[in-house]
Length: 60
Image (cartoon, rainbow, N blue to C red; front, side, top):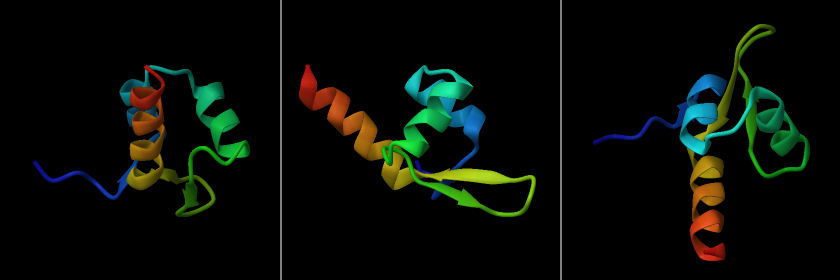
């Protein structure tokens, strides 16, 4: 299955099982990379989501 290059904020919330506020906190901390598409649209890169998931796996 082909993974998207960019995820909606809501998709990242589901994938990582985190809240909206936590997504933005992780963006501010540099853990997730946010791309602004327009004044009302933002996406998170799949590479940054994959890094977070890999870090979680390595910590277990």
